[in-house]
Image 1: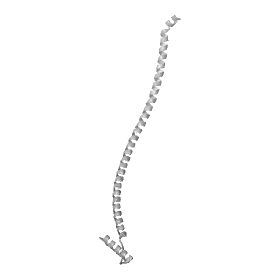
Image 2: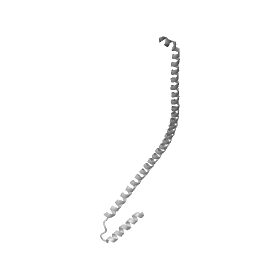
Image 3: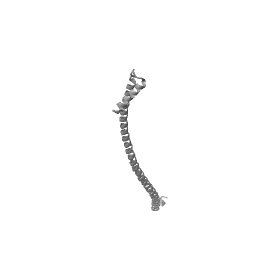
Image 4: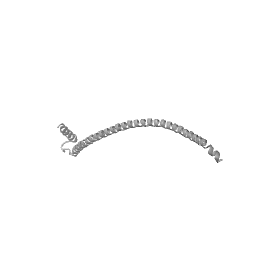
Length: 133
């Protein structure tokens, strides 16, 4: 038996080599198929990446524009608030002045030798003169 095995060892080695080459060929075909699929996946992924990068650029531009608008509105609001605070202070001063004038009018005593209507007319005429000044 050993003689038979020794006699056909070349044929066996060639058959084994053919089997190995066939399996290497099959594996190479499978790897090439995988490479083709991965190449397609890569191209799709690159297109998605490009779309995402463009969207990100547009989003950044929009956010920057929005932030500038917010800053502008904030500055405008601060200016209006300052203006309204000044007006409020002026109004409070004027109101205080008129309140004092009204209190002064209320505190005046009518002259005893005049009736109430004549006292009221005299008071009104004095105020008209004061306003005209």
